[in-house]
Image 1: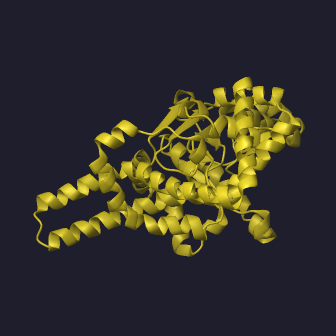
Image 2: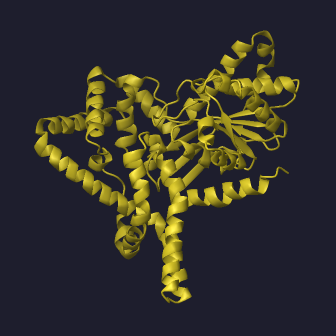
Image 3: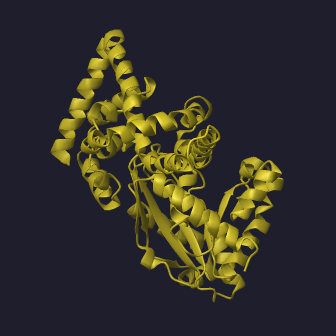
Length: 423
């Protein structure tokens, strides 16, 4: 047993997994039965949503898993030590300098040693994250680990490559549904004869096969010129969450759009998307969302308590994602990690104050329990507040930029008409 075995599993299952149960409304996992037991695994998910991609996959796999993370995250050394304790392994990029990249040789050997122990390595083969719902070109780093591992074991390791697709309804927001699709295992030993003749060809074939499988496991828009059309029609205008996160439905719709798309529709989608991004409002504020109206009416006191109780610890998170962090792919990760610390810390602080003020322990405990269980309601109330601010922006746009806003509305109407015809 490795010295961090108990700590890693405590952190993975007790802290992170339970935190995810509060953070997301539901995490759907399909295909876990495809993952073999007592075999070395190379797990390859798509990478759209920063740390959340790794969290939702690793917390649902029992195998001890290590995952490669950019070396920059391991500074300062105390942070690096903590990350190492939860099985993160630094990987160096060309931008880190040639001397740093050579350190990857040792890192890859370390990964191979874990594979020899029938453990798992999680690698994001796209090598970077992006919120776009598509699979980007894959790097060949994972193929090097895969083939080097099999060669060292004389092709007897039986290494299984496991492609995966992580599908979000809304990447940046809490209390949404996430769907993880586990793909069919790819056996590295099947490429043995090709690798012996031509290592580069074998690497490219493995990379291409993984890429095609990943495109099947998540929504994939191949043509970037068509991306805004597909995003708006499939993700923004669809109120049924389960259809958005179902890759079979999403990719079928992408194919229909691709077969009927026109230059005019592409231009309209680009204009609509650019207008909403420029003026910083979400198109769903206009298009609409599904809301738990009945629950919000019946449980109004609990919703109100949740908003009042959590609005203060939420402020550092809001400031970080709105004024400090420029890459919105980190929004959900910051919300999740900060909420794991800030919200419980605030609840405990208030409980301590109430206890010191002489309130009976039963009431203090009641406040703490109520804080935990009503925290899942905070998103709905906070969303109403945020949309109200966005609606104020929209009303101002109607008077300050009437022609532009009118074109925006007409654009949405054209896209909706196209959607009804095609989908």
